[in-house]
Image (tube, rainbow, N blue to C red; front, side, top):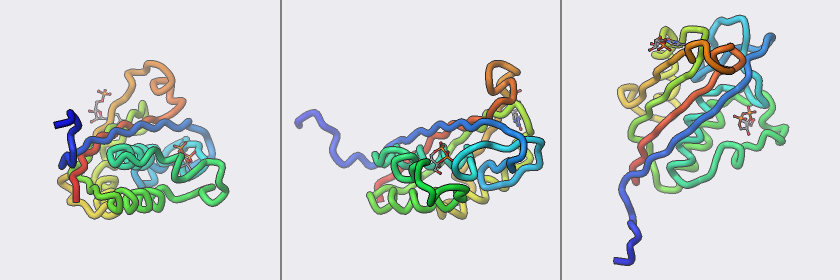
Length: 166
Ligand SMILES: Nc1ccn([C@@H]2O[C@H](COP(=O)(O)O)[C@@H](O)[C@H]2O)c(=O)n1
Ligand SMILES: C[C@@]1(CO)OP(=O)(O)OP(=O)(O)OC[C@H]1O
């Protein structure tokens, strides 16, 4: 033994993202358009949850992060549908020998209520990643009116994913 763990069958990935809430943009979270007074600002459609899932998948596979694969300086991704980026990133993850086992996510939003939309978000992720809906969990938290999230200046998402070697 040289002290290294070779060919481990499982790896964990984590992702975080945050986008500012502004007027005049649609609010798209987890591929679902949610009626709201404000939407998220970004180079793409600013889907904070799908970006965090993408980063968790890429991170677990050791493939860097979303900005490395889809730079926000590239006009090709201006207004991009984050579902397309997620599917593209996951194809790279699988090509590198890993598949997702389960996903657990939290959307940090003072408003609006995310719970009623969570099943639709799970369906989006299940379809795009070819996973069973039962392996995907989406939670939501306010920020108890504290800080920039609590002042509704933005929405954040945190995600963990378990990857298994294919
Ligand atoms: N944007 C949100 C925030 C929260 N929820 C649901 O409310 C529950 C209580 O949230 P606290 O932040 O007050 O602990 C939480 O467990 C969610 O079920 C939500 O749907 N959308
Ligand atoms: C998705 C990309 C690319 O359009 O842009 P944004 O929508 O600004 O999102 P961000 O979470 O900052 O991450 C990565 C970017 O490269």
